[in-house]
Length: 177
Image 1 (cartoon, helix red, strand yellow):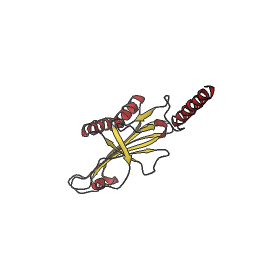
Image 2 (image 1 turned 135 degrees about the horizontal axis):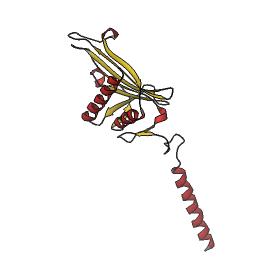
Image 3 (image 1 turned 90 degrees about the vertical axis):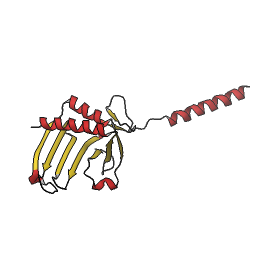
Image 4 (image 1 turned 60 degrees about the horizontal axis):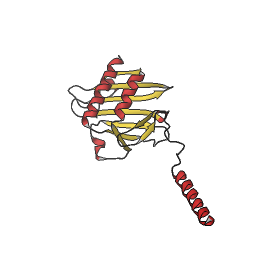
């Protein structure tokens, strides 16, 4: 009876240890005390790894335009940059000589959290060539430290979410002066 008990105990301890090994948390996991962006598709990125987010839209046809919004971190500061170019009654691409607005500002904590809130409404995938490459966009890319240098393609879950984000960016651009 003692041998059966010992065997059962050893098996139980063995299963317990194997189960714990399977639950081991990797070193680059997300701790509760760090801000983590959790996207609609379940992907997670620690805020410390976040480096840049680009939103770009361009039309090279008649009444050409170019619009870029960029969110990034620099020297521990959370920043926003925008640039707009237009070619009235002409064809593009819109170059630097066609710039109508440009500015940069440091984001408040509230503005940064609003930006992160918009990101949480989207999904990420690896960047690859596609038929969309020739469209006017918008093209949205997220770059993170220790990730693919080509960046990750971001997409909002709905067109309405994208329009809300565009309005948010336009408000920030107005504050840049």
